[in-house]
Image (cartoon, rainbow, N blue to C red; front, side, top):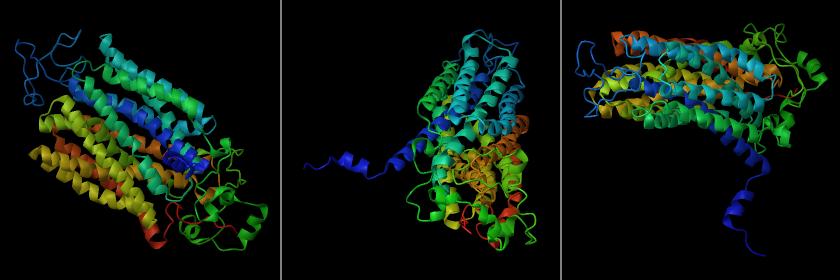
Length: 533
């Protein structure tokens, strides 16, 4: 009998479940990376929408501070604009406020829509819901770029396009997190989701490179191409996304996990007599620390949902207020509000900051800004690994937030000293800023959405994820808006605002950090075993 080829031997090393799980991991990674890919062009194109100006009473081109040292790039006339100030209406002195309003419109719509998206998503098939959202997002991303080809200079057009795009993009996050949560158990969740959440940085990097390729020659394509990619990935989602492992008779958590309570149906094996037995047994340390600080049991059952061992497939979805009662949801949501404020300010304004401070052209500034996302990849993975090892999610986030604030101050100081200093600080700042943001939006959200107080209600995951990310998106909307208002008075004021936001994010985690240190594993319930009474 002939020896099997090496490739085939590699394939048979893994079970059918493992291959499906790897496929879903990669597919959801690519799906959400495409969402972020479509959000990045606006930050790259800002420098082109208002690049340099010609005074109204002069015939000679006057370069402003961000283009004086950009080299000998020839001046060009944008079609149908009649001015060398960029693209109307962004060719006026208030261009920073207008660009900030575009960011705010998108992110504010995203924040409002996110609260509704999780609730709607729980009641619709994920595959259809996500597909429709991606097709619509691709269309409106491309529509923004169509303004270039049709010489549209109405601020209202770009504002409405951003608002609708923000609304439809809310279909993405609750859907992919719920799908991934269905396929992966809690073992090494921080590491798995830390790696998976690098889709944010990968999407930002690809979006920067794609938008930067056309920004100086035809900025409309900087939106049309990403829009086409998102729409194409929506079709891939419709054709290949498997919402739940039970749809193809796979186990709902990795079979290699050694703990029976986290393996398959044993994880949520609940019977009627459990309730009777529970009454005569003391609470486990997690419930004692978080649900009732006074140690009494009377309030414990107020928001507990009892579900059978099928993963809750036939159960009613949890209510909005019920999700808020899950211990840790409010604290992590408010923390993410400020953490995401910092992250999205960098996402939307970093290229313009580099253009102004390091005097690079728009394309080079966009390429350099990708280093912040490279640092974010390592920061997200590092946060996941540390939180898994220490079994302390809140403490891990708190440590990174504590280090991020002084790092931002150093960044604002030494980034003006040269390109090398900017590169080093971009990598370090990206890791510390993105680490807590990545951990909260992935592993923490999944932990809270499958918290043991829910007794296995799988329907809670999308709502919890939407609440946390929706609250964070409020900060994401405020950050770029404040940056647009503060930057005319100096970039230092923007960095002071970011440092203050980091301090506020840390403040909201103080109680959970104290709980973790005094009662290990209590902040999210992620590391405490599901005990069978």
